[in-house]
Image 1: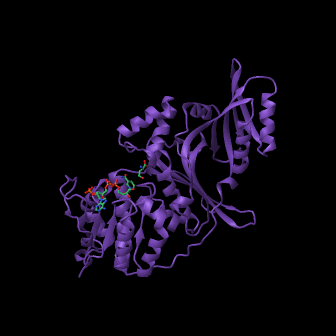
Image 2: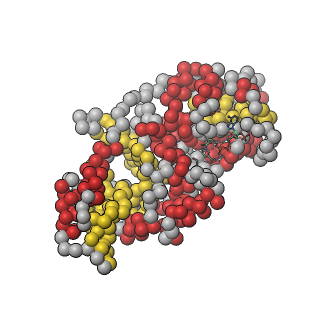
Image 3: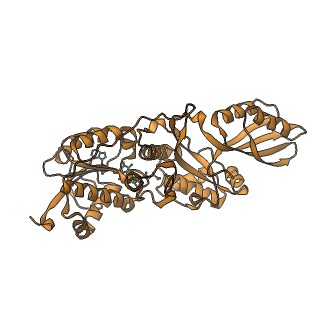
Length: 434
Ligand code: NAP
Ligand code: HSE
């Protein structure tokens, strides 16, 4: 049989936003893909919940999962249904049956990725998940392959388009969160009625866990990621950041640092952060995503693009299908990948700069009392800015890099001072301290 006569069948679990895009690309680009793979990729059965629902694309619909999972004649399974169950068991069964699997499911990979990768290695089939982090942006393959000879030190990512859209609107319009969130929901970015997956940082945390696992050859799961969303970010915080030369972004951060006894530790966190206006991540606007990688040899790299949407996400899925198809045809044995169990650094041990906004009583000695509280907790102040009216003032402080635990103790002490009416805001500052 000549290469052009060979066919491989791709079965899908799900035909929603991403699944429809996958079918469209596999059909529209069929000739080019056949040339690149050395075989035609045909769309086989597609499992959905409701086969009577109107669809963007025509397909052989079924509700029978066994028409795809473990089915004779289906070579590659594309999982674009989402959620942990039943996807976890279905993918385990597909891998055990010797089918390669492509998934866009960040939640599943960030929770059970190691177990599924082990199942794939057991049968020497592929488990690919490029679309699970930052949609269209190629980041999984660059981390796993292009940077395999390097040592990644830190990854900083704008990993959620919805929150980046909201923060961009707040920054450019001076608006508060609530009206912009309502607009993001109307535009279909944030879920209605509950936008928490995006706004509370859960979506970004799953992606950060996947990036940390890849960057540091470790098993990092979503529940190990310190997660704080954007609900506390105000128009005042954004104006204060701008005044000091920063913009506020929701970042996913993964880094490898040295623990107290010299051991390697992984720090992984998601939270709003001040980013210097001149940092490449600061100019990432609207619903775009970007990932900034610092590696020992390569230096600084940035990957930018659309983190969601039907065709952007499908582009990454179909790229993975091509990878799986090539491996299938080559019959290659997959190398065992060593996954270590590096300890996760407790958030209290993180060393970061902070912005602190205080409402204080405006009278002699207050600044000295506040400064002494920072000093008592071993937190060094880098800059202070004060604006007063009548008998009260707003004190904005930016610290030098300090231990998170010390900063939290400092904030608790500040809250106990009669001179401090309230700690209005506490936010971390990223980028190199200058
Ligand atoms: P979606 O539009 O809600 O589509 C889900 C599809 O899966 C639907 O066709 C649904 O069937 C089917 N489905 C769900 N549960 C099922 C079950 N138990 N049995 C059979 N079929 C089932 O979701 P999506 O936006 O395409 O997202 C799919 C995956 O891609 C998720 O893991 C998501 O996190 C990830 N992802 C999405 C984007 C994006 O831009 N949307 C970006 C990156 C990653 P019915 O059509 O019959 O309801
Ligand atoms: N809801 C996500 C975002 C897209 O806003 O980036 C899917 O991961």
